[in-house]
Image (cartoon, rainbow, N blue to C red; front, side):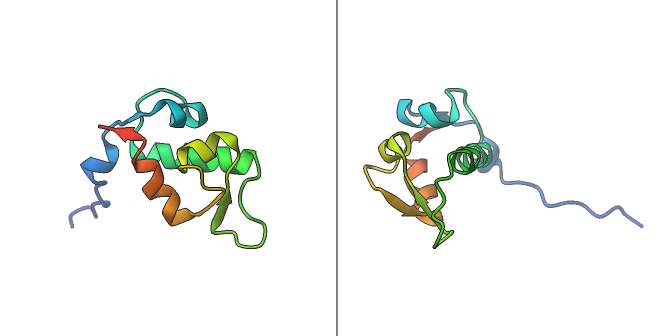
Length: 90
C-alpha cells in the first residue's frame, strides 16, 4: 500500500516576501513567506494584547499597526490579511 501524501503547500504562500518599512517595525526586516508574516503578526498582537476582548475577530491597532492598517484603529482578521499584503513585495 502506498504511503498517504500530505497536502503540499502552495508555492505562492511559501515564496519569501520583503516587508515594507512600516511592516518591518512589527515583524522584522527579513524576507518571509506569507504564512510566517501572518504568524509573526499574531505573535505581536497577542504579546501586546491587541485582540478585541468583546469581538475576538477584531484587532485594535497600536501606533505601529495603525501605519500598516492605513490609519484604521480597528480591523477584522480578514481585513488584516488584505491590508498586510499591500506591504509585501515579491
